[in-house]
Length: 460
Image 1 (cartoon, one colour):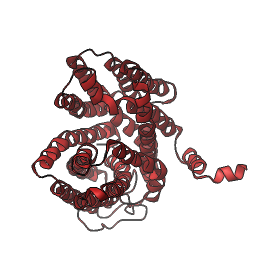
Image 2 (cartoon, rainbow, N blue to C red):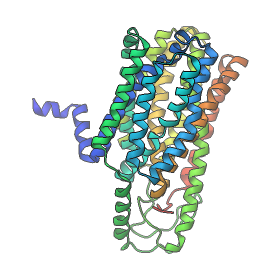
Image 3 (cartoon, helix red, strand yellow):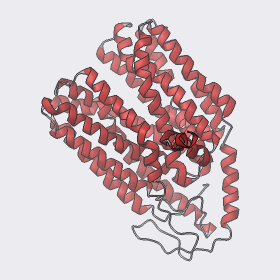
Image 4 (cartoon, rainbow, N blue to C red):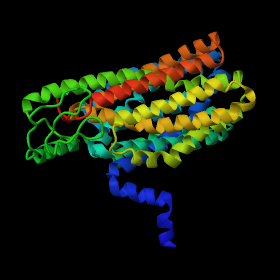
C-alpha cells in the first residue's frame, strides 16, 4: 500500500519538491496559498459590494478597482527597492500584515470615498510583497531550478483562486462585513507564517555569490568576451553558454575589466524585456477583463458558464504547471516565453473566428485551455529571466520594475480593449491582440538570441 501511494503523482511531486528545494520555498508557497485564498474570497465580489452596498455606479466601481492597478506601479518599485535595502523578510511581513488589516476594514466602509481610500492604501502596500518574495526565491534557488520554483508559487496562487470564489459566495450571505473580516484574517495569517518560518535571505545570496566566485577562480580565461549579437561567442571549457538564455549561472567575467560592460549589456536586456512585458501584460489581461464582456454580450455565454470556463484556468495550472516547469528547465527562458506568446496568439485567433453563438462555449473553452498553457510557460519564466539578468544587490528593484511594468499594462489594456470592442464589435479586437502576441513572440526570440552566451554578473 505504501509503495502504491508513493507512486501517485501528487505524492511523487511533493517528494521531489522536498528534495530539490530549500524549505523556504515550500513555506513561501504554503503562505502564498493561504493569502491568495483570502484574496479570492472577496475580490470576485468587490464590484458587487461597491454597487449594491455603497451605491456606486458601474463606472465608479470600475474606477475604484482601477486605483489598485495604478497604485501597484509605485508599490512594486518601492517594495523592490526596500527589499534590497532593508531585506526581503521585513518587506513581506509588513506588506502582508497591512494588507490583511486593510481588507478587514474594507467591509466596514460606509461610503465610496472611504472604500476608495482603502483601495489606494491596499494598492500601495499589497504589491510590495511580490518583488520581495521573487528576490528571496532567487536568493535561495539555483538559476536552473527557478522556473519550477516560480511555477510552484503559481500553483499555490491557483489553488487559492479555485476554492476562494465558491466559498466567498457562501460567506457573502452572512454579510460583507463578515466576508471581508474573514478574508483579512486569512491574509494576515501569512504574516504570522512569514514571521515564524521565513528567514532573511539577502545575506544568504551574498554568501553564495562569494562561494561561487571562489569556485570559478579555477575556470580558464576566455580569450574573447562575448558580445550581444546573434552569433555564438568562442568560450573555454567551464564557460559554455547556458541554454537558460543569459549564460552560465553565477559565472563572473574572465577579465574583471569587462564586468562593467556585462552589467550594461544585461541592463539593456532587462530594459528591452520590460517593454515587451508591458505590452504583453496589457494584452494578456484582456481575456480576464474584456473577453467576458464579449462572451456574454455578443456570444450569449451565461455568467455561470463563464465562471466554469474561468475555473478551468486554475484547475489546469494545478494539474500541469509543475510538470511543464520541470520540462522546460535548462532551456532558453526567452525562447520559452516566446512559445507562450505564440499560444496566446493562437487562442486569440480562435476567439476571433468563433463568432457563432452556437459554438461559443466550446471555442472559448479551447481558447482558455490554450491561454492557460501559454500562461504556464510565460509567467514562471518571466520572473526567472529577470532574476537571472539582475545583480544580487538589485534583485528586488528589478522585480519591482517588472511589477510596475505589468501594472501599467493592466491599467492601459482594458480601457483600450473596451474602446476597440465598442467601436468594432466582434473579431477586429481579437485579431489585433493576436498580432500583438505574435510581435511579442518575435521580440522575445530576438532577445533570446541577443543574450545567448552572456555571462552572469552578480553585482554592479
